[in-house]
Image 1 (cartoon, rainbow, N blue to C red):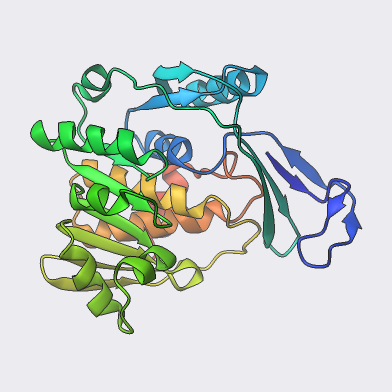
Image 2: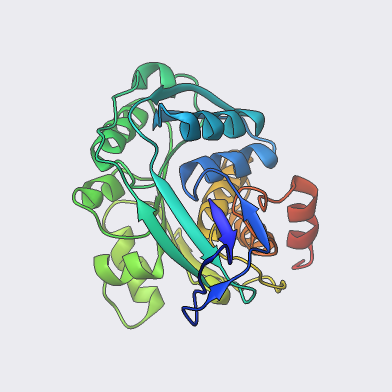
Length: 283
């Protein structure tokens, strides 16, 4: 759920502000990544749990309408709710309401069957370790998107073919002063390709021993909340399209930049044409 104002504290000053826009949508994460991949021409399915309440039903319907297969999403418990308060400058605060419910194990064999890649984001580490192990055994590449250290994440990273890491996660897993050294240290954990996202500075990656820099695409920033998940989904789409590593980076950076130009992570997932047009400006 994303609000702008909404009889709630302004993210910068703490003062009450009026509502300018209210958006109810799935929170940033693997659902947004999957929706982005679909928008760029891929097929996607989600496996895991979703709230068995009315909010879960709304989220499931929105994910399905985006073209993502929800057959393997198991209804369970109350929905986890994140309220994002976004100010006109793009800054935001988060208020989380997280019920203590377990995640049911989906039928991973069916969920992974026929997949060309498996995306994991560290949100349910034990389940995603099992999924990554099964994917690797089946010769399916694993793309791991990480933002913060959680118990077991190191094992999950070691099972990934591609690691997309936030600066925060890179600083914790591979504390180095130079980005090149950090990339090499992350690669030694197991992935054959590593990307560190740098927010407004773009992204930097390491593949086949080569460091590739990708500056951010210039856009008028409104809301940065879903950029990481959009980057993850767009990079995976580029990978599935057999694009070279540098083109995957450019595609992901262009999609992430465009997602920052509107309020709300779900509605801001960009179209394929818009992403390709922006990416082409680099050539």
